[in-house]
Amino acid sequence: MSRSSIFTLVLINAVVSPALAAPVTDPCKQIVQACTSAGFVLGDWRKGYGLYRDCVDPLLQGKTSVPGADKPLPAVNPGLVPACKQKNPKFGDGKVGS
Image (cartoon, helix red, strand yellow):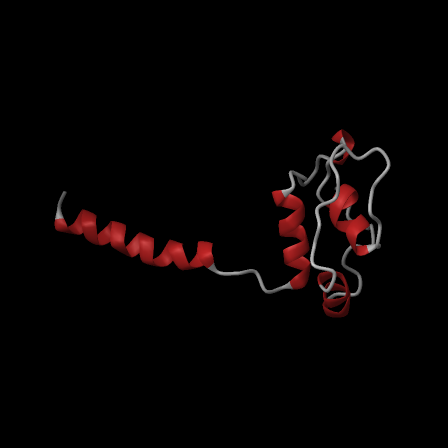
């Protein structure tokens, strides 16, 4: 392996690793991340596991389950919902069609 190849790999690792390890501090993004980790997918609301319609919106609306949803809602830190609503009052109001 050449020195330039090694340098490139080290540089890529130095740039990518912190981005992957950085915690998400935005409470709304943490809720979205929890839903994504639980298998909810943007745009798949017709299949019963849409990211917003079947997970994010119900969590922010205080629901514990969603009729017709294919997956159970993930557990999230109870402080995330009010923190998200304070930061972005319209987030999770059901206007996103996915």
